[in-house]
Image (cartoon, rainbow, N blue to C red):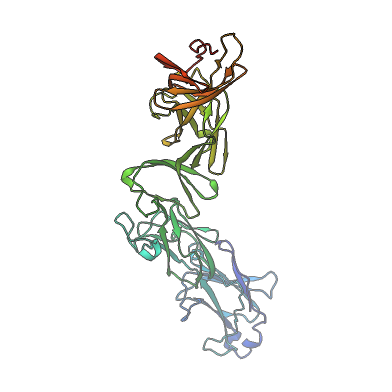
Length: 470
């Protein structure tokens, strides 16, 4: 005897049809009567009975087939006695509530040839076994031991073994309710249970900074209500900034934290009280941390000259070229109002460059004869060393007859500096530092002719003060 599997709907029935008539079995039966015993049990070790299952028996060797009775099982049994010999069909129907907890085996070869303790020629027994459906529970707890966290446990960390609520749970494509306050997710009684088998468990958390430690499938036995435990741990990333002597960075600097696959960037400020340490709760993945620093500001030339382009250079981390600009100051102090400003023009790796062309009018307030720049971006700054800033000055040198006079000159400044110059074709064109005071000038070929300026002024066109040399 065999019967097809039924889908879990109370309107569908499971039929087992006798494959031989009972005629022979009733030849010696008093009153030529026979019987059918129906047993419905649960496919577990002791085959416990299942009560309240609907059964019907139909005589099928007459046309049309005639019903022989309908009864629910009691202690798993339904008896149909006093039947006429012949072929019969037994139909067993689970109720809607029973279909939530039981199902027919997917490959049913149940035999109906057992005698159940009575002579085979008198009564035929029809046993039916249903599979109990499983209701496995999923429990999610924290795993926060130091070896898992990678650091000592702190007061703010969840305790090891504590329940995790609000976790979304799926077994294959079967959605469970979220884990409750005890960390448990289980199927409600109104939902159909699961057949035995292997199920992949999918756990999803709204908090992105939690990692599942033991993703796996579970093997579910018939009728199981076992609790399967899964562990999660908090995820974090920590960066420590120190100098070459492993001393914590105690300054203040902006930073940029780049999340995996560049999907997100976070910016902020590393303050002195953070002692060079930044920790963030984050999803698992690879992170990149960079302090937004500018350092090692340098000129690309030994001196700057009015009207000629000069390149400024600074090293940068965590910044884009558009973030950076260069302020120009008197070399004596890189504070106050800048004399000029230019944006960064290009970036190659960590090297950022800016180009500046000194303008005499903008630099008229210089007094030291030097300039320096301050590269800046947000809170980041880098100061260059000072370099001389010079401009060409023209001196006319002629004899008493007005003819050009070629000679060597020495310019003396108030701070003791001297600059040699040479006139050619009656003109000397030395590069004179801006803002320095010219106090004297001598002629190498005429040492007795020293020009001293009683009213020192800024170095400029001194042709009106220069004597006619003859």
